[in-house]
Amino acid sequence: MTSRQRLWFFAVAAAGLVACYLWAFAGLPGFGHYPGPYGQVILNEAVKQTNATGVVSAVNFEYRGFDTVGEEFILFTAAAGMSVVLRKLRGERAHRPADETGSAAAARPDQAGSAIRIPALLLVGPTALIGWWLASHAQANPSGGFQGGVILASAFILIYLSGEFLTFRRLSPVALLDAVEAVGAAGFAAIGLAAVAQGFPYLYNFLPLGQTPGAVSSSGTIALISFFVGLEVAAAFVLIVGELLEQSLLRQRSA
Amino acid sequence: MTPAALMDTLQVVALLLVGAGATAVVRTRNRVRQVLALSVYGILLAILFLAFQAPDVTLSELTVGAVALPIVLLLAISKVHKRAQPPEPARPARPAQPDRKPER
Image 1 (cartoon, rainbow over the protein chains, first blue to last red):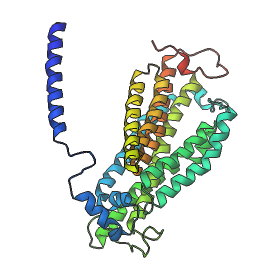
Image 2 (image 1 turned 90 degrees about the vertical axis):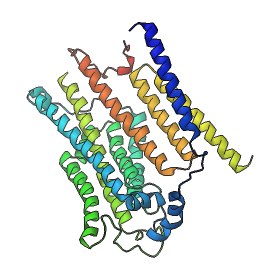
Image 3 (image 1 turned 180 degrees about the horizontal axis):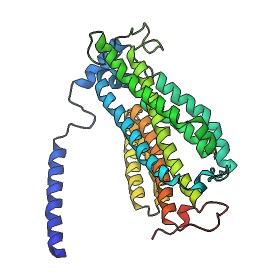
Image 4 (image 1 turned 90 degrees about the horizontal axis):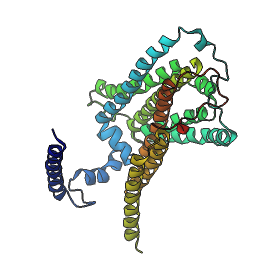
């Protein structure tokens, strides 16, 4: 194919793309004018039905709970796959004795200056608190377990950023992370099955909804599911980052 | 300026910033700087989502786009860099900074 032919080929393809794009664009609803009834129905009914003032959480963990189970297991599978792939590499290198005798200094390759250490350490507490609050109070805030879990995991990452890899590892042993991740993922599925066992549809909100919308005791299974999701996501992220850190440290030690 | 006009302005500014940010990420040649640009771009996207009244997506974007993804990418880059380097006889006092190395 000469460059001239290629150019023609590209011109035809690009013209087709532009034409189809503009055609599709003309059929879109106006900006901010969603035509379906679903959004309006949810806005009117969600707080009354679930006693959760965080309507996004109500959609994620109640109306669309089944989708969220799938999403959670995507992350679960990703973390599990990552551990499997990276663990094999780690085993290969464990034959070298030099890797095992890494001193404390070698295990902390990034000697962070105090300009990084102090803010990072100061932020650990507030970050963990925000993550915990988001994950455990999904009925009252607009996010829930996913965001809370990632923020909770960032608290651990901040500990690493402040140059404390050994502390990071001691606070997050892999066995514990595996257990927490499994409990989080299984807890979500188990809540769904508990509803089935009582004769309700899967993930039916069978717990008492409480009196006051948005209170800690309100929203039944929504807050509970979000809490389990928070555990799962936090453990999965710390696991993934921990595995990657270990990888780069191993290279450093053997170099 | 009415609140509605103010909101429109905010949304347009956020859209323009996201466009500029995406271009900056693509135009950055150095990989480590590109990751930092990506992190800033994540924050810009979060502002965009907030201006379009999606606080939950804002939080997701802040945590995943601006924090988690850059960390995973940085770790992967540092790993690949070390493999590409020949092993040095003596450890330097500070590890070689990847962004000082020429890209090609």
